[in-house]
Image 1: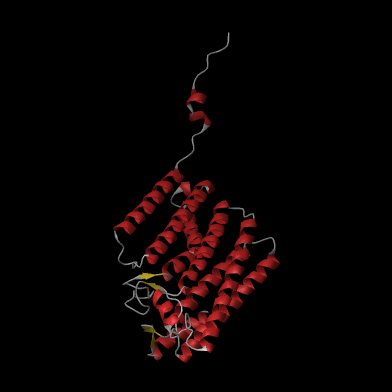
Image 2 (image 1 turned 60 degrees about the horizontal axis):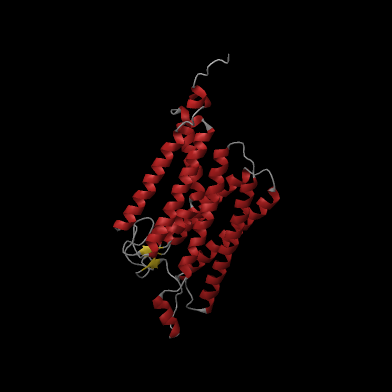
Length: 305
């Protein structure tokens, strides 16, 4: 994937072709970088396992195989100058799209096996254990959200009824694919974009372990973070907030609302998530009352005559 990212970067400079409003090599560049980060993180997580390592090896190999097939199809379609996702224009294009769907199912299933293995592992540090477990579970949900994009739109259903549909599915909601977009990500700035919850959810796999890494590094300056129960509670809070954010951006996208232009309802929901997360994080730092500080234990008892 790193090699393909370099090739795609060269393609952005050398190949001026555009596809659905974006440079034609932009998709393989994004996907290869994403897959590289995903594979690196899964490899690290599998290194933590001590039981069922053979099963983990097969699951990891399945992820590699599925990802390689997915990227091979995307690259072939770029060379041909055609869409890879949602393309049913010709029998060959349709076959490639179906194969891509099957590879994603295989990848998701392999990720599920890895998540189950991680749930069964007894890691010495509970904060690390739950950062890894919850990150993998949220990532599974993020991958599954990609299924929202293969639903035919109302326009596509009408065109399919007339036998003229060449595309089934879309990542934009309320506007056609290929309109004005954010730089780097390519997410729509005029309508909802289902790639956002897919991306955010999928990369919980990296986000939660990185959050724990930040806590561990910060422990040098904040002694309370050296305590495992405090780090564990903060990981659980971060996981809850992250899940709420995935739900929020999914809801926003399904309403046809761009990430860059949230309405009052979306902002209110975001404030509620952030406020709740801040309150929970503050509570995570509080020390539980000790028996000696409880009024019943601190009261002086009269001597028995």
